[in-house]
Image 1 (cartoon, rainbow, N blue to C red):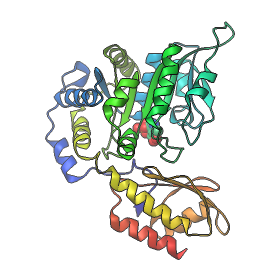
Image 2: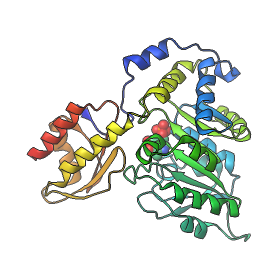
Image 3: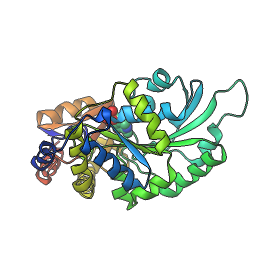
Image 4: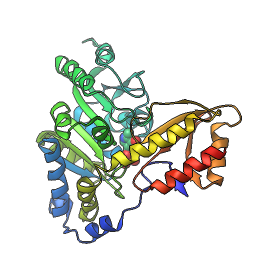
Length: 337
Ligand SMILES: Cc1ncc(COP(=O)(O)O)c(C=O)c1O
């Protein structure tokens, strides 16, 4: 099967497995795992931020960040299709007791003006707006990326209104590569950044939350409460170190592959709107002789695994385990439909 369901389906390469096998480890809850300490220092250093904490998942890093930045009854501002709102099990309410103000954005992205309009006045009837969370790239936005100037404008609004700014950077590396941006730019603007090592970078497990010393100190306590304190986690951290050192620049390959697939889709009469392909995700509408689930079944019969994300839309996610020959075969199959 050629598996385009998600960039989370990758398997560690022999070189990554070797790095994992060789990792020096210790008890990370005691702060004694050299590989975890290395990964955390490396991640914080990349962004020019003070500290970082290794966690099992991106859901946990996001939820810890939200808990760090809010009090029960506060309000979090985010885009309607944000992962933190749509796909984290109501965690904002469950873990932090906070409410949510949703913005209808443009392919997952919001503007400074929309953020400004979403901040509650200082009125006892209203929840206190304390946190803005952005997602870059945006998963449901089809891998769309922010223009950095728009993020800076949002930061200005946050500063003027004393709001914290969190980034769900599950696929930030894809945005950095696509937009030719630097880690440090992001480190200067956000109060906390969550990055996922288990998506485009191809590790089996793990995310890192990066922020100030104070935020990460608090995050360590919350991670323990959430049950995310791991012991000899260095075997996993070593995969993350390997990924940060070897698997970032190559993301351009995934982006090229996504473009090639989209170009072929464009030629087919049963394909409607294709969201602009900015990184490794292709979301497209299916019309005419197929519904999206029909087409997904047809592709599966031909050995190609995709997800119908609605009755009319399919998502293809390109990743480390998709080889040029897989892209060619996918294009050949689409052409026969
Ligand atoms: C944008 C975004 N944020 C966060 C996550 C959560 O990551 P995890 O699956 O590691 O909890 C995902 C997972 O797909 C995601 O796409």
